[in-house]
Image (tube, rainbow, N blue to C red; front, side, top):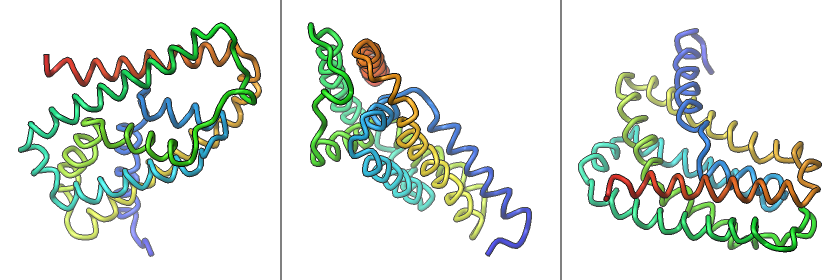
Length: 208
C-alpha cells in the first residue's frame, strides 16, 4: 500500500510519460478506435495492446533496452516487415473507401477473432518505434529510480497504456451513431489508409 506522496509522484511520472508516448495518431491507435466503433472484439484488442505494452515495459526496465539499442539490424528488419504490412493494410482500407457501394457499420464485414488477434499483434510488434519507446526510452527513464521506485514508475506507465487503450476501445461506442452513415466510413477508411501509409513511410525513410 502506498504511504508517501513521493511514491504517488513516481507513479504519476510513469503515467504521464506513458501517456506522452502512446497518445499519438498512429497505426495501432487507428485500428483500436476503428474496431471500437465496430464493436468488433474491441475489448480483446485493448487487452492485447495493454498486455504487450506491460511486457515490453517490464523488459525495458529489466535491462532489455540496452540489447535492443545495440542491435540496429533487428530494427531494420522490423521496419521493413512492418512497413510492408502497413502498406497492405492501407490498401485494404483504400479499397473499402473507394468501393462503389458503401456499407454502414452494421453491414460491414467484421474481422474474425483470429484475424483481430493477428492484426493487433502485427500492428503492435512489427513497429520498431514501440521497442524504442518501451524498451529503450522507458528503460532509460526508469534507471533514474532505485528498487521500488522502478516498479512504481513501471506501474504508472502500464496504467497509462491500460487507460488509453480501453478509452479508445470503449469510447468508440460514442462515435457509433456518427458512423451509421456510409460517408462516415468512407472518411474513416481514407484516414486509416493515410495513417497506415504515413507510418510505413516513417519506417522506410531511414532505410532508404
